[in-house]
Image (cartoon, rainbow over all chains, first blue to last red; front, side, top):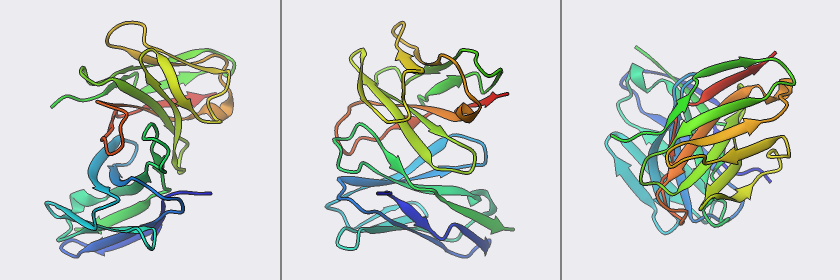
Length: 112
Length: 115
């Protein structure tokens, strides 16, 4: 089964608007993480939320987790052109923590 | 801020050749990982490494792949006889522990092109 499917696949917004990306997963998890990847670059860890947490904030980022629905959302408020990137959710898949399972990502484009 | 570094940033190799991708994990980290991302696709787990041995590996990590920590700082991924389908971005990562809820730090990746 696939884990960590993001939606939408692509999102285009104006600078200053909020961007919301969703992630769904299939198996139980211990934590869920969001990463950012600029085109052709490495992965940057944004935020980790544990399975017993429902919401977490970091600067302009807000992440929610609903384990009953097996879903998470990433909200970027007051977006900037520099937020243009791909965003991935990743889970541990309750496998013992040695590996991270990534989704296919949401490509966010913020127009200046 | 400490970071994971990978070299080279881009490697072009002929099909059938051996390649070694190099990584320097963060110095006090004990767990090391390799992932790959074929262009436009998901980031896929390859292998995790702890205490000088493989902890876990995926189906992708077949006999053509091997990992090594030859000294106290480097962590390498070797592909013995490259195939066209090995073309991908390869990411190294490290973490302090292998426990749940531990953040892994990723390098910038090595883009491998097999021609």
